[in-house]
Structures are given as C-alpha cells and as structure tokens.
Image 1: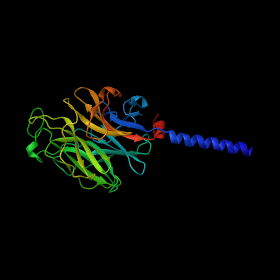
Image 2: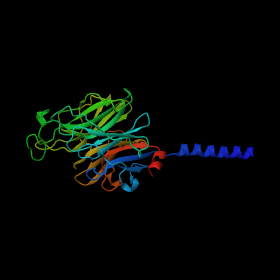
Image 3: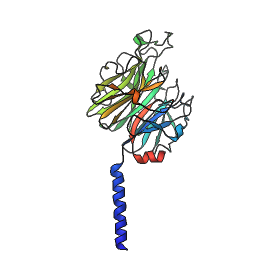
Image 4: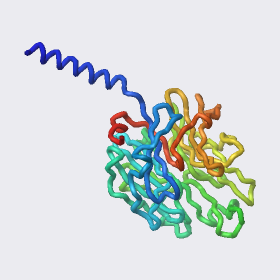
Length: 316
C-alpha cells in the first residue's frame, strides 16, 4: 500500500511538473465592436497571427458608466500584483474615462468614471486611454487624447470642413497613480506640434517606445498614419516622431506585442474595413504580414497582452 501511494504521488508530481513546464504563452486581444455599445470582447492566439474569439464573440462586460455608456478602445494590462486593470473610452464627447479591474477577466469590479479632464471647461473629449506600468517608479501611467480648442491655435480646427472651433486638435495627456483611487493632476504627455491620438507604449531593454497616430488632417496635409517616438523614461519626454511606419492607407489604434523574439504591431486600416499587422525584430525595420492575419469579424481598436493558459481555460 505504501509503495502504491508513493508511486501515485510520484506520477502525479511528474505530471503536474510536466504541465507547468510545457505551458505555452497565450495572448489575448481586447477589443470592441460596432460603436462599443455591448462592451468588452476578447480573442486569443498562440502565435500572434490567428486570433479566435472567446465566448462566441459575445461581450464579457457591459458598459455602465458615462452618459453614452460605451466601451470603446478597451485597454487591459496586468499589474505586478496580478490584477488586470482596464480603461476605455466611455463617449465621443465626455471629459472622463472608464475603469474596472479583475483577477480573472470574468468577474469585474464595479465600473468607475475617472474624471481626468473635468477641470478643463473647454475640453471636448477623452479618447483611447491606455495604461502602462512604470516598474522604475512603481506607478501606473494612464494616458489619452483630448482636444481643447484654442490651447494649440497653430493647428486648430482640423477636420474635413474646417469649421472654426468644431474640428479636433488632439494632444496626449496623462496622470499617474499607484492604486487607481488617487490620481495625479493631468499633464501633457506628448506634444510635438501636431494632432495626435491613439498612443501606446512598450519597453525594450532600458528604452521606451511610443507608437501613435499622427491625426493631422485638413486644412493641413492629412497624415493618418502610425509613427514612433523614443524615451529613456516611461514618463518621457519622448522625442521627435519617426517617419510613418504604416503605408499609404489610413491607419489608427496601434497595439504592440512581443511574440518570442519578434514584435507584432497591430492596427486598424479603418477606411478599408480590415486590420493590419507589421512585424519587426528590432522595432526599426518592419515587414507587412497583414495577409497572414486572421481575426474575428468586426474587431475594432483594443490591446494585446500575454496571459497564462490557466486564465485562458477559465475564459473558455
């Protein structure tokens, strides 16, 4: 009997150890569909090319905050404490963003409205917020795009009609926090003299890379492409932008993931109604792999991040 118990214990131990050793990295894509009315969608991938919707492509979380109660541009990241934090765009025209957290991506905390630009009476919006954890200062950065008419008059009134004080002219703003309860005062995060939205950050070694959309539009020469800036600090300052990384099509909503030794840059070719993918070994030279990308129909701007297979199994 003792031999049987010992043998059974040994076999189980080896099996558990083997499972832990052979678990593959798995990646999730948080996204929205339509106008963001139904909330958070998730897809998974093992290789960064084929993305499969979870939950039959039904929402995991319905938006509850903001006047319009939307959940656009959901950004999820896992903090060092093991908790997933999410922020999102609640409306086209409000001065705050949505926030919630979860330990397993299924059960979520009460949703909260973070009034990050309520102190600015003329602010028009808060678009595409993102979170980044600064492991040097041990704090979170939350950053987003806002237009404040008259704040940067040299590039004001950008839209296809040029109506005074009706166009957009975004800059990136940010706050810092350690607990998502107490937030610093909002400040400028990126301003290099042009209309900018949809920033996202990755760290490679000791360098930080900000991918962003140059939103410059008429009456100036339209850009509508993805560019990159660098910094030695998560909070910046970030330098001048690179030349466009994306092609002649209009692109937005960049999100970046490292799969093994290769960086994957995903983005929305929104006028073409399809997603794009560029890959790079060094964050400098990019190869278009859009034709190899598979993803759920209707996928819109979100973020990619790595999780354990245990999290994936729970979601399935």
